Image 1: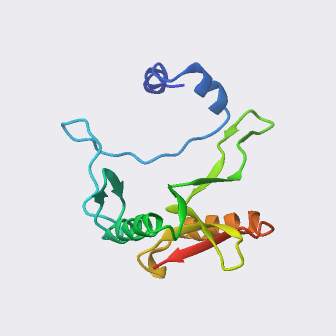
Image 2: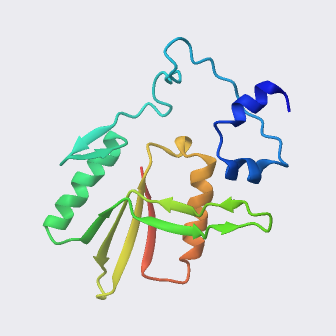
Length: 163
């Protein structure tokens, strides 16, 4: 190794070096400028405006509006047990035969609550608020399909996209 690389590797944990010794890692060089800080992104990718309601920060006005609606429904007894940002495990984390740790894959919805239908059955409704179908990412679409598939045999789960 060249002396420049050896100097860089002095600051890297030996565990990381051992794990990556046979791998070529390719990255992006970013000019940190004089301040030594990462350049900030300009603007918001989806053009949404974060909003705070009841001390809770929401990603968008639509999500905050839906929260207010659901809180009203809960107050009137139309729904129960409103949960913000419920998380669903899609795949367990694991370690590969070579020792690489793979993190679990999770899906985080915007809301989940219980509702009772006319026949008296209670359902868990899982909602995700989207600005429009054109702003859903490929990652979201994949996770949305997987979470529905994993719960397809549980009739008391209902998944909804709210526009």
